[in-house]
Length: 152
Image (cartoon, rainbow, N blue to C red; front, side):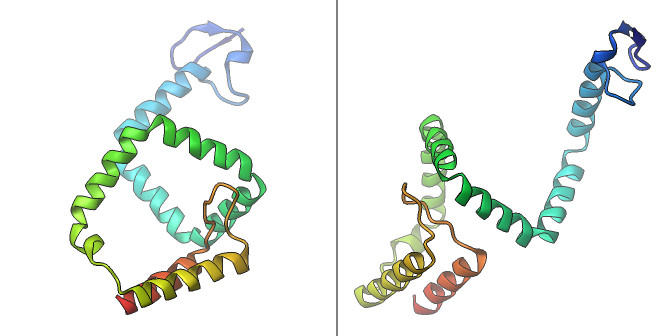
């Protein structure tokens, strides 16, 4: 038996982390309280860390996605089914915000050329899974965006 230094209750040793004087329950409540009070600080720290390690993170994500295609596909499908209304709401909001840009129709020649180049890139790099999802590197997306931006 061990006494928690936070709540002062005697508990079994398996209810404590190895080198901590707080029981697991107190530790969790302390962490929840800290996270609630410091949301913006935590968010900015995560953003900074992500921006600093963006290439590594994307590389790991791509590797994981390619190694676990079935699981990722299943998870995405489940998410889409569970959050259909939320996704539709976000899509509608995006469409309303970008209506003018989305309604501009490119000339058929450019559209065909873009589609052809895009499909060739996807096929050459084997970036599409069985469900039709694309696994693109940041550089691929940037190239496509630059091409579309220049030609529209």
